[in-house]
Length: 150
Image (cartoon, rainbow, N blue to C red):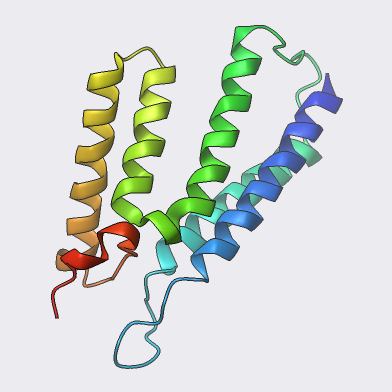
């Protein structure tokens, strides 16, 4: 049903806006404005999500009914997890919020809770290290602010 795709597209646009807005709340890196800052990658993701959502709204699949079964519930859970991730990114920091989001999504896809959250923690640390040290882009530490090296 085309209506279901359009509703989901609108919800994903809201998610893209919230995620993009939260990315603009990152603190400016020391040394002034840079062309590529910590908000660049999240803003690109928000733009891709918004464009994909527009496609769902403008060109919905007429044959797909909304999955009100377990699949529909899992989709709603995934959207809630991603919205919470965007909202908690600044206060909790990148590593903790990424570990929680990736862990929860892995768990919902069938991994055992321990394996899911270990995967989330590894993903959070690896991406944080990659961005902070390889790309020289600072991500928020949040609760782990005591780890910041001057």
